[in-house]
Image 1 (cartoon, rainbow over the protein chains, first blue to last red):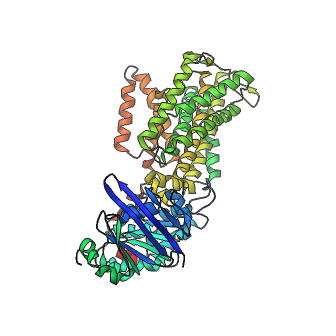
Image 2: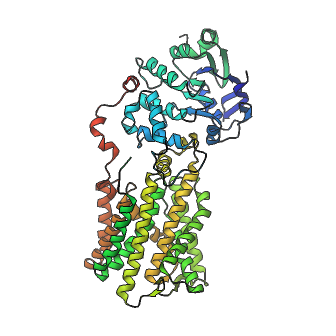
Length: 248
Length: 330
């Protein structure tokens, strides 16, 4: 099967710090891939390069065989890669539904309307439907500033879903969520995401989440890939236990 | 979404406000004309401020509109007030179209200072330009309306008042529709987090550019009004203190309400006129205290008196923050 994402020889350095060292990864359609690694291992740098926020020093990034290396975050989003953030990037003065409506407007190919009300033309319905998938429909008219971190996380993911991306990148989807809520939250995310994004890459520190939801794990260390394979094998790898999971 | 008056009712209110000028004493007509004209330019600043950017140099477009109209009026004898407003708006808009895409990539203080710098460049060029009268500027003829010549000063003042109120009112209606539109909502999103807007597939720069051009159109039309009121133009139109006055009105108004811009502009003109009348040597002090009072007690502007903050509106609900689990199982 052709890979959805194909990354070859990706390098990125910040001065003396090596954030990506000849990274080569292929991700097939339908996979749920977890990126693990200690802080500073290069996971978020990888996500930032794939989504066009950072330009790699060298190497190539292809989506469905098309080179996207020089594209901006907007261009990458339009081609089919969406992301959520470790710290939810929401418009906190707007309501939950308005946040989603802004995301819906991002899918338009024509210019934004000067006169059509923001909640017209099915935009609000689409927003509420997406919130409903995450069990948040009754919070549609609440300002985001009033919502707890876990809810904001879900809204952030819902916004990334609006484009029905070919590849969805989730940066620590359960960070900030309590231990008791993390499985319920992740179940909800996987269930809600399924209709629109078959291929998911998620950065995660919680090995219980990783072993439960990923069907492939890529372990990062100092900007390079330490191990890549199914969760059981990778999490038992001695080097991964030494440098990433700390024997967990 | 907020509910508000139907546009037809708003148009009727604008017409009523224009006709109300017949009942106003003469001295208030010119004051209201200046207030309406300043409100139009401040409205443009508010439109732009909704993207998170404040222009400290709207004098640039104000002067472009004024000089453009003055030159055309003197060259071709075009004195019609409505035509002059349209030409002023076009001159401001065309300049905004050139500058907007270049400046939209900057944000915050860099954006503000660049607009200020550009307006001062124009000011410097105008002062040195002998063709345009240098620092003294030049005069233009009395405006007409659809072929009617107004010899009686009272009638001339009323004509200018009516045209300025109708133009500013229509601009206010357009801005109200814009604020509620898809573009208006995305503008607020750009204000909060322009990178996230880009990640969602929308060009934040394009949104800023569109709002910038709208602000330039309004400032250009405002320049035409100032020209018609003074029948004289000089480089002071582009000077930084002129731009500062428009920013004052915008700060007083806040960015939430179109009506607040008109109230703020009128309030500022009234405070300025009365303090100048009764405290001629310390009127700037009174004006400063008034501004301080508004900033201290209404930090979100005069509009916050009637536009309730979403956060406060939901205070009772906010007492119980919504957790992920509560959302997820509901």
